[in-house]
Image (cartoon, rainbow, N blue to C red; front, side, top):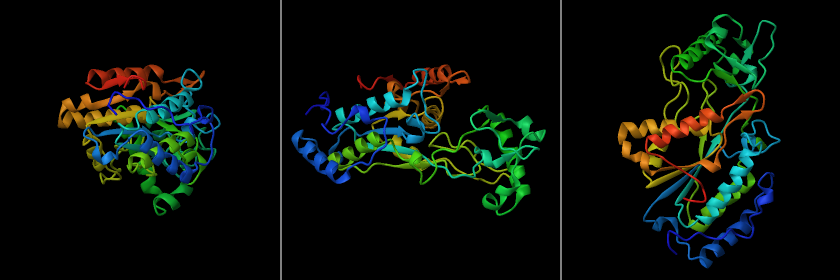
Length: 338
C-alpha cells in the first residue's frame, strides 16, 4: 500500500449517527480493526518512516452535539456535526498513514473562574452565562464580585486572596490583549456525558488504536479553577496576584507534538480552543525554528467558529487567525485533499 492510497470506509461507520450519543462496542470493534488491518495490509504504527500525529481538539459532546451546552454550529448551524463526519472519514481513509491520534479533553468542575457560581453582584445574583463578559472595570467598580461562598472550596477559605486573584486575573487578560473573561454555561463537566468524546469520533480513534497498535495520546485541560484554558498548550494566565505560579505551559506535550514529522489539527472551536492552541504552538515554533511551521496542517473543513445568531459571530476572527497561521508557513488544507 502506498502513501497515496486511500482506504475505504469500514462498514460499521454510520454517518447518520455522528450527531448521536451511543455506546461503542469495543470488543467487536477490536475484532473488526484487527481484521481490517489484515485485509488491507496495515502495519503497526511503530514501523512508520514518516510519523504523523492527528491532534483532535475538544471533539466532545458539550461542543459538538446540538442539544448540549456549547454546541459549535458555525454559520451553517450544523458546523461541528458536519466537521466530525468529515473527521471520521479522514481517520478511516488515512488509517495507515496516521501514526498517533491525540484527542484533547476540555475538563471542568462547577467552581471555576469562568462559571456563574464564581461571581455575584450586589443583589447576590450570578452572571448570565454566555451573555456576560467581566472586564477589569467591572471588577474595579464592584459590578461583579467574587462569591464569598466559593472560597471554601477553591482557596481554603481565604476569601481575601481569591478577591485579589480575581482582580489580578482580569487585569492580566486586559494587559495581554486577551478576550475579556467570558462567563460560560457549565460545560465539559468531569464525569458527565458532555465531557465524553462524540461517540463516532471515539469509535474512530479506538479503531485506529487497535488497527495500528497505537495508543491514543489523550491530553486533559481546563481543570484549574483559577484560570481559563482555551489552549491545550498553556492556560490563559500563569501567575497569581503575588507573582507565584498558578499554572505552567504544557512543555512535555509541545515537545511530543513537535517530535512528529507532521501534525494535523482539527476540532472545536475554530475561533477559540483551536485558534488558541495553534497560536501557542506557533509561538513555540518561532522560538525554536520557524521552518517547523511547514509540518503543521490545519484541516479547515473539520473545525467551525463560535456563532450565536443575533448575539456574536467569531467567523471573521477565526478566518483572520487561520490566514495568519498560513502566512507563518502552516498548511491550511481540506480533509479530502491531505
